[in-house]
Structures are given as C-alpha cells and as structure tokens.
Amino acid sequence: MTGKMLSALDKALSFFEDWTLFISVMVALVALFFNVVLRYGFNYTLAWSEELVREVIIYTTFIGCCSAVKNRSMIKIDASVQLIPKLKTPLTYFSNLVMLVFSVMMMVYGWQMVALQARTFQKTVILQIPLAYLYVILPLTGVLMFMRTVQVMYQDFTQSKADAENA
Image (spheres, rainbow, N blue to C red):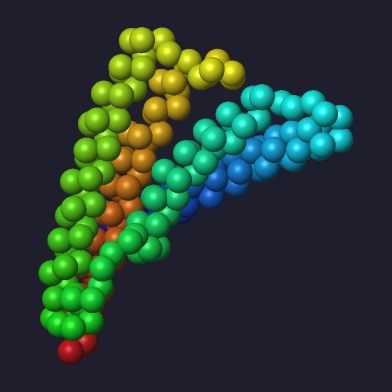
C-alpha cells in the first residue's frame, strides 16, 4: 500500500517538476531569443526579458534541487564512505535527516518571507509581479524536498530490508 502511494506521488511530482521546468525554460529561451534578435537586428531591447530570465533561473534552481534529491545527486562528500564502507548506512540516514530538517526550515522561513512580501506589497521592477508570488518557491521547494527525501528514505529502508532477507 505504501509503495503504491509513493510510486503515484513520485509520478505526480516528476510530472510537475519536468513540465514546469520545461515550460519555464522554454518561455525564457523564447523571450531571450527575441531580445537578442531585436537588439542586434533592430537596435531595440526588451527590458522585461532579462528580468524574466533571472526569475526563471531562480525557479529552475529550486525545482532542480527537488529533482536532485530524487536522483540522489545532492552534493556530498563520500571519501569517508570509500575509506570505511560500514559508515555508508549511518551517513546516508544522517544525510537524509539533515535534508528533512533543511526542508522544514525552507517551509517555515519561506512562508515567513512570503508573508513579509505580501505585507509590504513589493513588486519586481519591470514586470511588476508581486514578490510574494516569486517567494512562494521557497516553501514549495521545502515541501517537495521533504516528500522526495521521505521517498528516498523509504527506498533505502526497503532495499536494506530486502538485502537482509537475501543474505
């Protein structure tokens, strides 16, 4: 039951991550392309395209972190595991625990940042997008990273259980 739920959640999250990344990067790419054509072809520039690209880079970085957790691609130092292989399991659990704590901090402090931006009614300079909309990526990333880390922990647990049964 739990495996099926996590599999369905994984598919839904992967769909969300993949398509939002694809769409946002394509929109930024098209805007930047037109800006380059206008700048060098007609000596005219679109000021908003650079701001859009900056916001897309921020968004893709945060959503990419969620994909990195799923693919176990987060930056880590594995020299101690290579020197002492028995440390692999405890260090993996410690790393996952740290990731859970970090994702909760992203949720809590991210919502505080969103609330601050909502109270002050700040907007981006050119596009006039409320900054609260942009800061929502912080708690969203925290939630997604939390769910991805739970998935990874479940996979590790079931794999170690299967390895123990086979041995």
